[in-house]
Length: 176
Image (cartoon, rainbow, N blue to C red; front, side):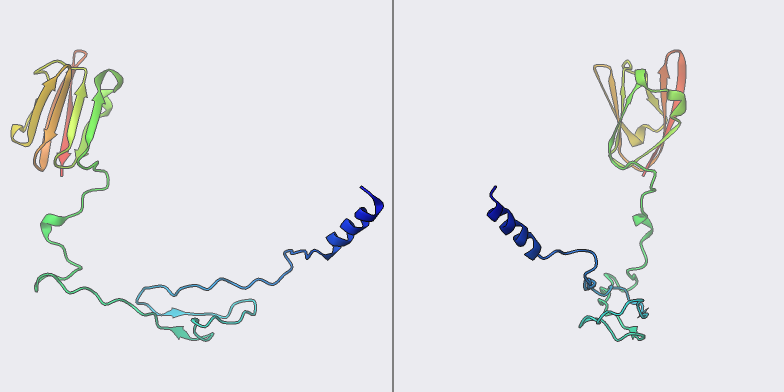
């Protein structure tokens, strides 16, 4: 590099604007919340010009809300539910297939299970006719190649008896 180009490069670097943390920064505009409550505003610690959508400082802002939908029936409001539409417990797995490999599972630790209607308890590594249930009307059973599928057809509580390694284990399945 020649002396002339070196001076030119040094002069060019001095002319490039440098941005840093000392430059003033304006806050981003914020949409008002969609709740029905009034929100008191307070004076911020720094002086910032209010945005066009912000209310004047020190006032209470009334927030626009959506109208509630009309009830579907005259005797029912959106806040009430019919008794049959109760929510599923949070510990319930829903209508899923629960695989239970008997050789890999400590059955003494599995005492209860919650599944949704249509859920399947799949027991792998057991012979035909060994698994029994106490409520035949709630379960559809299927056996093939060492695998027992128990499909739960309706809500209720089913006791599933599993004989394994000389012991008999009872798993209570709650179907919701």
